[in-house]
Image 1 (spheres, rainbow, N blue to C red):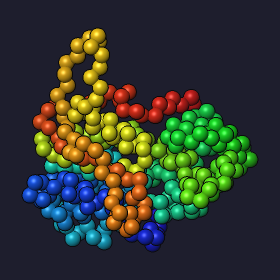
Image 2: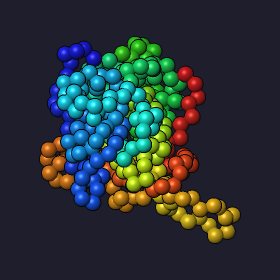
Image 3: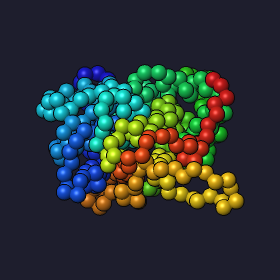
Length: 334
C-alpha cells in the first residue's frame, strides 16, 4: 500500500459493545493481559485498553495495519505490544499466559475499501487478496489451478452452486488473457450467473469469498488459532470470536462445543471412551448478534455473530477436526 492510501471510511469494530460486556468480570471491569489476534484497525484492542485491560498484544499478519497504527499506538505506551504474525501462533507471540483472547475473523472493511488489496469485487485493482501481502495471490490461483480445483474451492468455500460453470469460464478466459485485475474476474463470474434481483447479493460475492479463503488458508488458520488460544488462556480466561459467515460460525460453534464436551452422547452399543475433561464453558451458550442500534450504525454487522467461552483449568489439547464441519477439499494439482 502506498503511504498515502487510506480506507474510504473509518473501520467500525463489529459487536464491540456486547463483546466488552461479555468478557467483563462480574463487577463490569476488564483487566489483565490480552491478545487481539486480528488487530486490523485496532478497534478491539483500543476497546479493551480503554476498558481497563493492563496489556494487549495486537497481532496481525498484514504489515499495513501497523503502519496505520503509528498515529495512535504510542498513546498506550508499554500497555500495547504490536506483533506481526498469524493468530495461529498467538500463544508464542504473546509470550505469556493470557486473561483473554479476541478474534475477529474474515476480511476487514479496511481491507475491502482499499482497491489495491484486491479483496473487493466492487473496485478495480490487482487480483491479490493476500492478507500477509506475501505468497501466491488470487491471480496466481485462478491462473494456474486445475479447473476441478477451482470448482471445488468455489463450491466448498463459497457454497456457490454454479461453481463448475464458473471454473470452466475462468479456465477459458485465462487462455485468452491472464488474470490480473478484480474486474476481470467479476466480468467472467457475472456472465455465468443471472442478473441479481433487488436485495440479492452481487453475483461475484461467493466466488470472491471462496478464493480469498483459499489464498489465506483461513480455515486452517482458524482451527490452529482456536487451539493456540486454548493453550494461552489462564483458567477463567475469556475467548471471544466474531464471525461473518455461516461456515466460520459453524466451525467455531462445533469447536467450542467439542471442547466444552457438549454434543451427542454416542451409541450405548459403542465401545466406552474415556470422558474428556472440558477445557471451556460456554458463556453464554448461544451466539450474540447485532442489535438494532448497531445495525443502524454499521450495516456491515448484519451477518456478524459473537461466541464467548471461558477457559477451565483442564490441560489444553486438540480437537478432532473431522467433527468441525470443515469443507473438505483435496487439490488435484496445479
